[in-house]
Image (cartoon, rainbow, N blue to C red; front, side, top):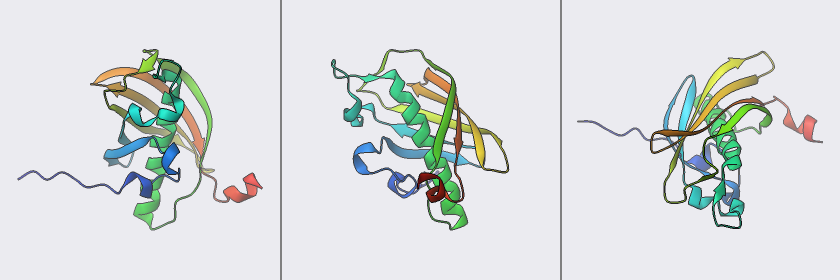
Length: 151
């Protein structure tokens, strides 16, 4: 008998509040990455004049998937969730002008490199019905003392 693995609720992995929480659920994770589902219809704060989600919002989908990945690490180690920062994006390529509202997206992020300061490089991709619609490399950091940076 096959069982579907259960993952924590996305709100237990990502620190965003309800209206800005754009990731719907986790479908896979392992030591090197995470796969999440996004429903573009939930991204109403980003709708353009035509009622569509512009493809540049994909960077935020990727960033929130990375946040879920960091949340996974915190949950597994018994640590509290910590804030992280997107430092930069390389080669963001959107193959569509907007994301279809009627179809959920699969966002996949894989850790490529991590240094001693917790600066991490991720390979990110967004798929719509198994078709690649956006990709990028994203640098992020999760400092041990984020309040020292913010204040």
